[in-house]
Image 1 (cartoon, rainbow, N blue to C red):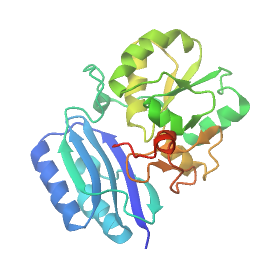
Image 2: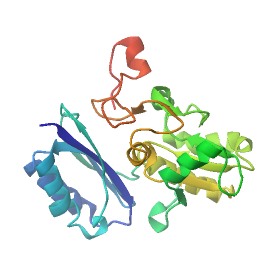
Image 3: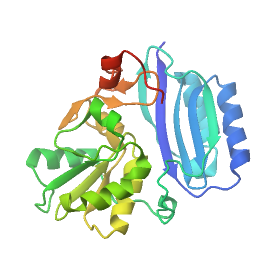
Image 4: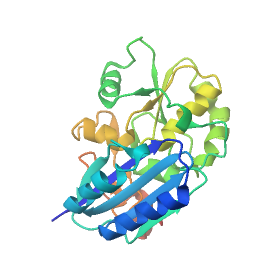
Length: 260
């Protein structure tokens, strides 16, 4: 049987992190799951894999049983091999490090655009108000090299905490356009959108569900997308139909796997 792979996150104010970590670790280990769960005072971010019945039962009876995560949706895909080597459950200062403490998505989400609407905007060449679209890839350079939206702005980030300085340097590229920030699952582009709004760039949206959500919502057609999506597990990349993709360029060139 193939393994079910899930990813999800939620920005929500959390307390009692050590006890929460221990509950999630204990229940996931008992279910035979592997992957990574990160918890912080700003929320949860997880990538997990396991036998489908066991993983779906864990989502319903452990994850959703925690009130802050009730009804938390997941992005699902399947693989023939287990894509994680072990289970890691960690407490972090930030789910994704930006080093910008005024950005607090747990206090209010960034405005978003759903995948179907973005696909329509890309097909017509503008948003519904007639504004030009600026797609902004908020991922690291090696992730972008595996695949991205055609014509997307790529600032060659080496780590997400470089984003604020990169935005300040490249802001003029985005002025007067509707900016759609995107990333793998949504967590980075949500923080990026909030930062740009804080810096008084008015027309900024995040892609709801990120790249993986776009793949799922468009049935693998992924209009405007080129290549695969880098993922931080042993599949390395995912194709638009959510099947494992080709090795990323860095691995094709050097014959070695990057460590996630």
